[in-house]
Each structure stands twice: as C-alpha cells, then as structure tokens.
Image 1 (tube, rainbow, N blue to C red):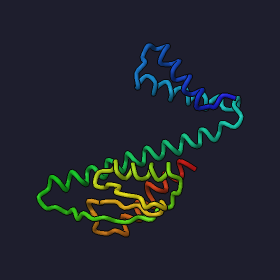
Image 2 (cartoon, one colour):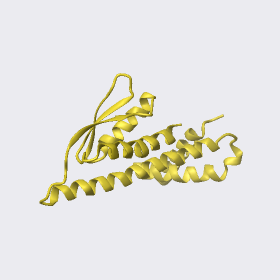
Image 3 (cartoon, helix red, strand yellow):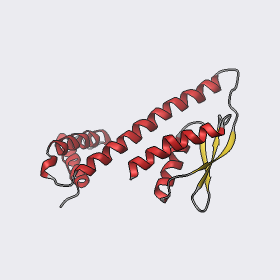
Length: 159
C-alpha cells in the first residue's frame, strides 16, 4: 500500500504540472488540495486516519509557533524602540521532558528561532537545556512557558 503522504506528494506534483505553476506556491496549493481530496476519500484508504491526525498536530505546532514568533517579535521591538529598557538578560536551565534526539533538536530550534531567546547547550544526558533569555526576570515563568508551550507542542506533534 502506498503511504498516504507519498500519494499526497504525487497529487501536489500532478497539480503543479497540470497548472504549469511548478513553484513552491503551486506545490503548496496542490498539497492542500490533495490533502482535501484524500480526506474526502479516506474510506478508500484503510489506516490513513493517523496521517490526518498527525498532520493536524503539526499544523497546530506551526500555528502556535507563528503566534509565539509574532508576540516575541513585538516584545523585542518594543523594548528596542522605547527609551526605557526592560530587558534583563540571563542564562536559565530548563529540565527537558522530551528524550528523543529529534524532539530535543526541534525544541531547541524553535526556542532559537523565537526572538529574545537562544538555545545554548543541552547536557550530555539530554535532560537539561540551557537558554539565554532577553527577559529573564522570572526564570521559573520562562521554564513553565517552555515546558507547557513549545516542548508540549513538540511532544503532541511527534507522538
């Protein structure tokens, strides 16, 4: 049986070829349209429900990260543009719940891509992450935000 993801890729390529728009945008439109077609015809593909659940979880992770990106960007821009500087940088250790290397990599990259934070190091045992935060007034709150935010989203998306 062809994996549903590969079938979705084939539908995206077919869409791009038929429209003559072989660009990232054309492939993206084809992928979304292919996903919708596969979702409608999912009774024909036994066992494909996990594909759509996982795709929904990844979409949620992307949307939540983009929200964090906008909020953090506005906070950093506001601090840079206003005369009173509220940033109190610091290095914080964050205990990690994720154990797989790919999950740790994803969490650290999401933290680094968020303005105002930077992943510095992960201990050899993979249980602690060290980050640099621009607004480190309350380290416990930052730990909570990472644990209940990005780390939880990654666990949900990759389980």
